[in-house]
Amino acid sequence: MLSISHSLTGAFIATKLPIPGVYIPTVMASHYLEDWIPHWDVGTGLSSGKRKRTTAIILELGELVISFGLVYFFFQYGHATVQWPAWIGAFIGLLPDFLEAPRNFLKWEPGFLRPINNLHALFHHSTPDMLFGLTPQVVTIVAIWLLR
Ligand SMILES: [Zn+2]
Image (cartoon, rainbow, N blue to C red):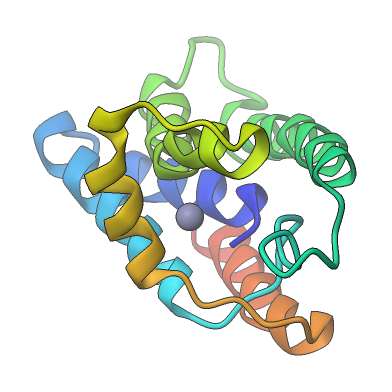
């Protein structure tokens, strides 16, 4: 899924269950569950060659900036102190994609990451249909906004 979806989901779970021993594994599980839902993201088309790697990298960096802004707006804005669970949750929510980034974007993978990246790939279902692939993510983001 989009980094926006994973980071907001991670921040949401972590702020609702603010015990690291609870939210870290729950957020990790949420990443695999969300990737299992057929989705569209900036990496869609990369493996089939329909999207250039440089385009995907530029889009991903832009999306990370948007994700950071939305986590701030949803969970940090209006608070005098740093909302650590939100930021840690957002980072953990993105972690499986960060670990896979060298493989996807640089065609390079340290051997120790292969098992976790292969597990990640097992759950990953993307669709080239942007509308179909973005709908569950928009629903998720709106639900997080309303329930946060
Ligand atoms: Zn993923």
